[in-house]
Length: 295
Image (cartoon, rainbow, N blue to C red; front, side, top):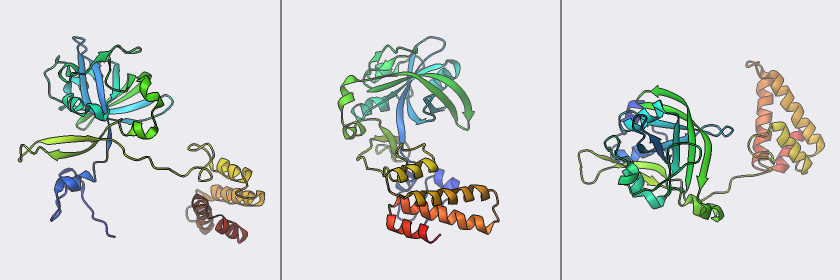
């Protein structure tokens, strides 16, 4: 299986391959982005503005997110976020795809996208901008960082509160991911205008796939240390005390040699640790025991 390489300019200009639709090739370089509706208030008039965009989580505690606001496509949101310190990030579901798309329309300043899209505002509890009734989840946020970055304003917001529809609290995980959040999954040429016109398309996640759990990784999941993981394996009898001691000793040797990049011993110990982790990750316990017995 071969790889095809592209330059930056080819990527952003939609790669052209013989016999391939450039939009389809371009799709591979535009991964799905979580969609959001960003609600702000005009700093001069107090009027509600809503823009459709994408977001990315940053930190969990405190809970922060990053928005990227195009200065040309979303000038009202760009101005409002720059001059005020509050917003609501609402998560649209697949039941309001047309309404979400309408919130990206180039409306005149002061014309409410909520009204045009027939969406319903309701009072937020911790910030002044309203939340959106039709969105199952609304995050109330404070703006903490704003920086111009190429064509966009990069905005870091901190979540200070949130609301959620009570009805979905009992839904299964599969039902939830089939409804929200939606993602910007790709874009296509407007079929009514052959020469120009791009339409963003939204989609949702499908199946939920099981990921490995303990003993593949610590009992606590992400965030545990290597030593914690090994102790968990020992305590649950996946490895013996002797095997545990040997693994920890190898890890200590690797730590001591870490900065000695030209050391042959470092390479040897690095390979040992790598093989140990690999065999545990694939639960090859017999191979692991044989491997450790020969070290």
